[in-house]
Image (cartoon, rainbow, N blue to C red; front, side, top):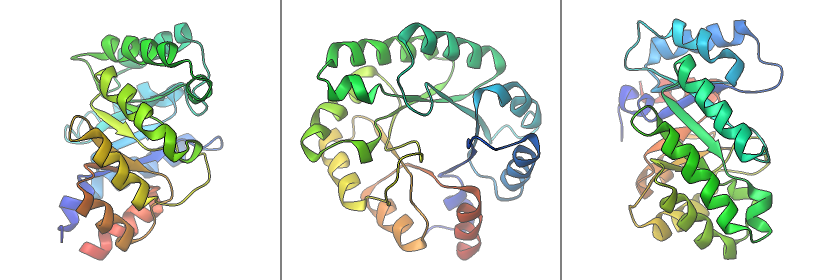
Length: 223
């Protein structure tokens, strides 16, 4: 069983909903300061402000998404967004895979796009590919995992949190089998309980995306 700090160092907290304001971000940063969550995630327009707020917390990283939440931006737009995030101080980028193109069988398009974004961020930021697990069939998981691994990203992330679905412990176990340790896994979306968190920890999941209220409650339980 992890300590409260060990749990917090595996959790990304975020304010990436349409209605989130600067006040929400301030509250999120304060929670990260108190509990030492490893990453704070905001929408791209707040990245520069977030970097300033976290400048005195070197162990709490600046996070933002690329192509969020649908992944259907053109490759050129994703690259432009990624470059702007890097210049604004992002340290971890969660890149939404083009799920529509993937499901259409356009694997070369999807793969090339992810490789280009990951290459742009190389040695500048940690990268995570969001495959949006709840949009994929079991039969599509192998190809999605292969593309994520081949992209060179640091993590495969299960979802944006914008698509309905639970913690998916059994399906994440399958992702672990398919990736064979060749990429780290970030479980995100629908993780609310200590039991789910510990089940995913037992699978070897390295990072978690959990809403702030649930993350604070979880860490307090370990305290």
